[in-house]
Each structure stands twice: as C-alpha cells, then as structure tokens.
Length: 106
Length: 292
Length: 140
Image 1 (tube, rainbow over the protein chains, first blue to last red):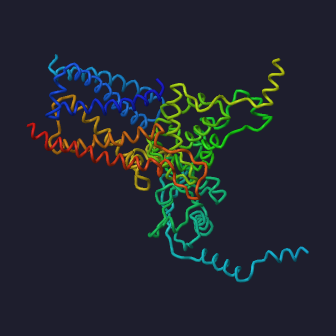
Image 2 (image 1 turned 120 degrees about the horizontal axis):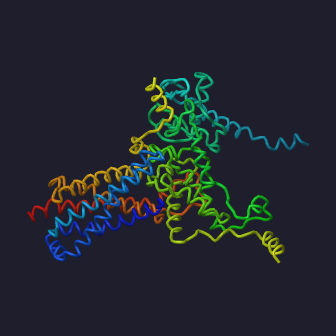
Image 3 (image 1 turned 135 degrees about the horizontal axis):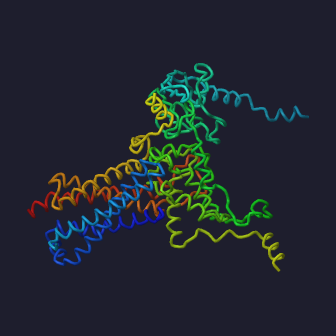
C-alpha cells in the first residue's frame, strides 16, 4: 500500500473515532442518553466494532510513524510495518472478544 | 567635458558630511559581546570544545563580519563557510543562539538581544564538516532525488526550445514563491522529524517537488509522486511549521508540503493540477508536416 | 577504541535525536502543539491497552479528568491538523512578498485555526471534567 493511502486512512479513521468514540462515551457516562443507546445492542455492537477498528488502526499507525521516524533505516522500515500490522490484527481479535464479554454476548 | 559632468554628481558638502557621520555611527563600537564558538574537526578531535572570544561590536556588524574579524585577528583555524555576504548564496546558515539563521543577515546586537553572549554552532542534524561548516552532501542528494527540473515527453523541444512557454499570472503565482529557495539548509535543520530521521526528504526537497509538480510546463507529476509518496517522504511532515519559521527567504516550505499532500490525495481520485504540458506551436507545425 | 569511534561518529553526525522533537523554545506555537500531539498520542495508546486488559479499569476520579485533558487535546489539535495537512486552511502561495515576509502557513488563516483548536480543547476538556467529576459521582 502506498504511504498516501495509509495516511489518508489515518485521517478518515480520526474522523470515525471522533464520532463513534463520542457515542461510546455517552453510552457509558450519560445517565439520560446512555441506556437509550445501549438498549439497541446490535447498533451499539456495530458502533463499537467500527470504533475499535478505527481506533486500533489510528493508534498503531501512529506508533508505526513514530517508530519509522526513530529508526530511519530503510530495511527496518518494512519490518516495522509488518510487525505493527500483525500486532494490530491480533489486538483487534482480542478487543472484539473483550467487547463481546463486556456486552454479555459471549 | 568629462570633469564637468563628474562635478554634477559630487554630493553637496553638507549631505556628504551627514552620510559620513551616519556611516561612522553605524561602525562605531557599541558594546563588548562574547562569542561562544563550537570547535570540532571530526578527522582529528575526539570531541568538540567551545572557544570564547570577546569583540567590540557596532550597530551594523553582522555575525559573519564578527566571525571574519575573529578569524583574521584571534583564531585563524576557525572554519566557517560563506560566499556572498548578502543572503543570496545560502552558505553561512548556522545556529545563532539556538536558532537557524544566516550569519550574514543577522546583526550581532539583534542576536545578542539584552544579553552579551552569542552562541554559534553548526547547523543541527547536518554532519559537521569542520567547526561551523556543515556537510551538505545528503541535503543536495535529497534535492536531486525529487528531480528538480522540468520533465517533458518532447525531449528535443525541451533542450532546444523554438519559442517561449506561455503562462498566466495565476499559473505563475502557484509556484513562484518556492523558486526563491537558496538551499541554505535552515529548514531541514529546524525540522523535528529530521532530528531522528536521517532519510527524511526534508522541507526543502518536498517544497521543490511541489514547485515543479504544479508548473504548467511540466509533465512529471507521477514520476515525482513515486519519489515523495514514500515512508520517508512527505507524510513524515507533521506540520510543526519550524521550517517556514526559520526560512531566511520567506519561502514557506511548510505550506508547500501541505499543498503537496493535498495534491497527492487529489491525484488518487484522478485529479491533475493542469493538463499535460502543451507542445509549442513550432513543434506542432513540424509534427503535422511530417505526419501529413 | 570502538567506544571512541562511536563518540566521534555521534559528534560528527550532529543529530539532535529524540530531544530534537521537543526542542520548542526558539520556534512558533505549532512546534509546541506538534510535541504535545505526539506525547498525548503515546499516552492514549498506553491507556487503551490498559483499558482492553480490563474494560472497567479507569485511573480514578481526578486522573479521569486528566485523561480527558489528554484525549480532548489530541482531538482538538487533530481537527486542526486534518484541516492544515490536507491544505484546506493553509493559504495560497504568495506572488508578491514584503521585505520581511512572515510565512503565510503560520500567520495566515492557520493562526485562527490554532486559536480555534485551543478554545475547542478547553471547552471539550471542561465538558469531560464535568462528566468525570460530577456526573460520575451522581451515577455512583
């Protein structure tokens, strides 16, 4: 993938996080709106799945950016990308499981 | 005849007196400033050390003037690179009290401010050649890597143009600002990414890439995107804007890099900044003749 | 002998290293924001990893408010960065320059964007602190 695609998705996920993260925060912290959002489990689960994916992409891509700036060797750059991708996918799987447990679905 | 003409150009005595007085004022010593100068020769020295020199400075004295005085009178081994002394060649950029500036454009009293110490270091994030001179090899390599020249498909016409290339003022204004770059290295030195990332192309190269990409005479958009759209290319800029802050020529490389990013994103969706560069009239005539 | 050549290489390369990211003193406010954005980003990554490990885990009342400062700064400054980095609020290249021209990308529209981001940061942080300190305690 071209670097521009990666970084364009970085911006897109940033906007997604702002929206889905707000819903997540309201659901868990607002006594009025919270139960309303949480009552629709499918919708909230969908929201959380998107939030989790976007958050992990954004977070791990940020870490990748910092790492490849710290280790400017071109050989390492490729390995950092792959390593971060694997760690990110694994964390997403674990995160989904944690999410299901937290919502009482698993 | 000649002497009569020359007489007309001699200033009146009171104006001459005033001019001489003003110039004497400019060069009259005002205060004593201490120069802390970084001394290091990578081929000989184990570690750098600092040397201090005190100098009577005047209003009009630039840091480069002071350095040349020090080199001439106090320390002949001092290594400093300079050429034009008027901010056009970009040879004498250095860290003056912790900020990238041209030594020839900065007055000592301005640099010292209220204090009386001026600290001089070679440019950060550049290899040291000797003392205050930095090694620009990788900087120029990066500049070269973005192909800073007009790329066209009709190479014969490019090398022997048969007529002028036409551009409107708007088309000219898109890139004109970036042509003022003097390659002094201040922007790359100020960039926080360049502090760790040796491979990063840097503000200067990226701004120059943008300058050629939006030039209507140029066809090399995709060729340059392949160079700048990499892991150590334009996406390692996070808009700390220090490059524009320190630029002695007001080039604003930070703006160039952000516009470059916009251009690359737009290119992904099929947009091009201008139509393919048109062949010149003479060229068209010759082609149609040979074709028909 | 090896150590000696290592030192020599260090001085000859003259790279500032990671401390260069946080050398903010001589430059404009964008440099502060850049450094803060990076630090808050790393803090948020650390927090979300801890948050996954135990979903109910939170640092606690006042620490929650502090977490809000970190997150809302990243959000507010992130909005500014998206607008600036996609070339939307960065101004146009100049054709005519004044003798001592300050860069348009710093002193143009982007200045207002910085103010907007800082105000947004304060507002969002205040809302977060209200939820963390008042609403949370009401909810029990």
